[in-house]
Length: 115
Length: 111
Image 1 (cartoon, helix red, strand yellow):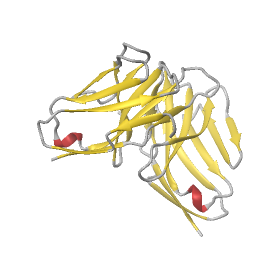
Image 2: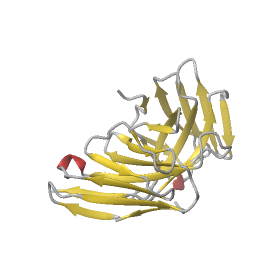
Image 3: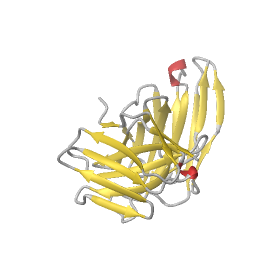
């Protein structure tokens, strides 16, 4: 998972608190993503970005906001955390849509518990 | 609406035998498919991919087969090794890199 770094790795929040997850990549990738992984649900796309200054909604965007002010960073914010947002969050990045090595690189995950 | 489905939550295979993981999809607009492998407490790592214009792609012990008419793809691992024990995710891409994942299949290789 070299190249995609997520912080923090672990966090416990109280219901209603806010927090921001930071994702940083050093591969000069255009595309960045935030996923959440829940048992039996696979990885579901929350938001994604196709370049600096752009963001778009994924499958499960409600309750989250994102920003891509710099190409290398993609921030995921929870404005008012809810227990349903207890999950493992993965950031990912990719070069472009049609490169020969069309792979997406993931970070190691951030474990978030909302109590 | 689960566009990519892995109907087997788990699979157990004896070391040395073939492991076959299956994946079905509903969206005919998907044009690229990938398999990811995930160990506990780590992020998913890319394993192998296939374009929709192909029906087979091979990389060492791993082969992915695509049947577009059936909207089905499979991952074959042969021979299976203990280090292959992990959760395997099937994923599909449509449009601007919206990667959609299946639920995952936990593969256990028994010695």
